[in-house]
Length: 342
Image (cartoon, rainbow, N blue to C red; front, side):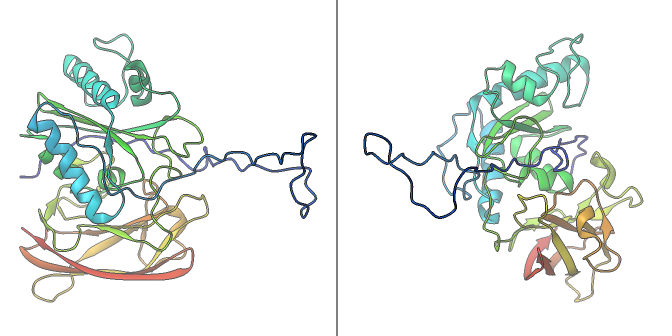
């Protein structure tokens, strides 16, 4: 069953938070390092990493209930298959997420932000909520949230995966995760610390776990079995207000940590069990519109390295084959894979 989720994940815009570039001065461009008066060469400055490669193992989580551990395991299972890196549990993010459920339930609200005058307030934004719970200020914090008839955390994660903006958010470059699930509320916090180059509410596309520039990730993954329908109105913002019921959103993504990085689309198609093409629209970031296929729809809510194929009708049951052709920064890339809709 596919439940409705009303949620928005904050995303840091490149325009407002471009990474700073250090400028070395005073060098002559060719001489060796000079010794100090004691005859010992001056050691080079330690440079903090700007990102890490996607990790393939993390410590086992310490969640007390299967409902919580199932969310952690379900999301990491998909992230591992995609190659975007596993997430490690951060118990402070867990606490902040649970505190936010207390606030949301007390005020009958499904929003990421909090109002100080209301019961259960801990912080105005998810970042403030994490800091109030004892978290480091030197990180970025993002959040997804749902309020529906979920039976466990895995079902909540499955709902996020079967969407557009939440799918791109939960499979991005974050490193840490905090989960809370109770009273039909599901809140998941994410953190980025490596190469953060700032801090606050939202997930920047620099830092964190970065795939190689020639690596690709997509969802549904190879040979996955997924629900074949998606209600665009169940997601906020709505990715297709003119479509009453769509098919499974299909995402293709590549690393895009620099403001100039862009993934464009030449062709993005889906063929159903009968061998016929499935009616669909292609969603691309604004910067990718001019370099992409005719008919591609520019979407301001997409990350620079993410594009979507959104079927404009529910998928029939059976095997579906996706074919993508495009480019990252002008370098051609193509993939074909299959999944089963139910």
